[in-house]
Length: 73
Image (tube, one colour):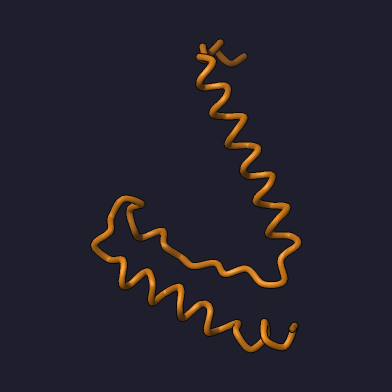
Protein backbone atom coordinates (compact mmCIF):
# COMPACT_ATOMS: atom_id res chain seq x y z
CA UNK A 1 0.00 0.00 0.00
CA UNK A 2 1.17 3.50 -0.78
CA UNK A 3 1.67 5.89 2.10
CA UNK A 4 -1.07 8.49 2.49
CA UNK A 5 -0.03 11.81 0.95
CA UNK A 6 -1.31 15.16 2.10
CA UNK A 7 -2.50 17.64 -0.53
CA UNK A 8 -3.54 21.22 -0.09
CA UNK A 9 -6.61 22.60 -1.84
CA UNK A 10 -4.25 24.45 -4.17
CA UNK A 11 -2.50 21.19 -5.09
CA UNK A 12 -5.81 19.58 -5.96
CA UNK A 13 -6.99 22.54 -8.06
CA UNK A 14 -3.63 22.73 -9.84
CA UNK A 15 -3.78 19.02 -10.69
CA UNK A 16 -7.38 19.32 -11.94
CA UNK A 17 -6.38 22.21 -14.17
CA UNK A 18 -3.38 20.28 -15.51
CA UNK A 19 -5.52 17.27 -16.40
CA UNK A 20 -8.21 19.50 -17.94
CA UNK A 21 -5.59 21.28 -20.02
CA UNK A 22 -4.15 18.00 -21.24
CA UNK A 23 -7.59 16.63 -22.21
CA UNK A 24 -8.47 19.84 -24.09
CA UNK A 25 -5.10 19.86 -25.83
CA UNK A 26 -5.52 16.23 -26.92
CA UNK A 27 -8.98 17.03 -28.32
CA UNK A 28 -7.67 20.01 -30.29
CA UNK A 29 -4.67 18.12 -31.63
CA UNK A 30 -6.78 15.14 -32.70
CA UNK A 31 -9.09 17.38 -34.74
CA UNK A 32 -6.32 19.46 -36.34
CA UNK A 33 -5.39 19.05 -39.99
CA UNK A 34 -1.70 19.61 -39.23
CA UNK A 35 0.22 19.85 -35.97
CA UNK A 36 3.69 21.29 -35.74
CA UNK A 37 5.81 19.46 -33.20
CA UNK A 38 9.09 21.21 -32.63
CA UNK A 39 11.66 19.59 -30.39
CA UNK A 40 12.68 22.19 -27.84
CA UNK A 41 13.62 19.70 -25.12
CA UNK A 42 17.15 21.06 -25.12
CA UNK A 43 15.99 24.56 -24.10
CA UNK A 44 15.09 25.65 -20.57
CA UNK A 45 11.64 27.29 -20.62
CA UNK A 46 12.98 30.51 -19.14
CA UNK A 47 16.01 30.83 -21.42
CA UNK A 48 15.36 33.64 -23.86
CA UNK A 49 18.95 33.83 -25.10
CA UNK A 50 18.26 31.43 -27.99
CA UNK A 51 14.96 32.93 -29.16
CA UNK A 52 16.23 33.40 -32.72
CA UNK A 53 17.08 29.70 -32.93
CA UNK A 54 13.62 28.77 -31.65
CA UNK A 55 11.96 31.02 -34.23
CA UNK A 56 14.10 29.38 -36.92
CA UNK A 57 13.01 25.90 -35.77
CA UNK A 58 9.36 26.93 -35.90
CA UNK A 59 9.76 28.52 -39.31
CA UNK A 60 11.43 25.40 -40.71
CA UNK A 61 8.70 23.16 -39.25
CA UNK A 62 6.03 25.37 -40.85
CA UNK A 63 7.84 25.39 -44.20
CA UNK A 64 7.82 21.59 -44.18
CA UNK A 65 3.99 21.46 -44.15
CA UNK A 66 2.96 24.68 -45.89
CA UNK A 67 2.26 23.01 -49.24
CA UNK A 68 -0.03 20.41 -47.63
CA UNK A 69 -1.88 23.15 -45.73
CA UNK A 70 -2.33 25.24 -48.89
CA UNK A 71 -3.68 22.18 -50.70
CA UNK A 72 -6.41 21.83 -48.04
CA UNK A 73 -7.81 25.31 -48.75
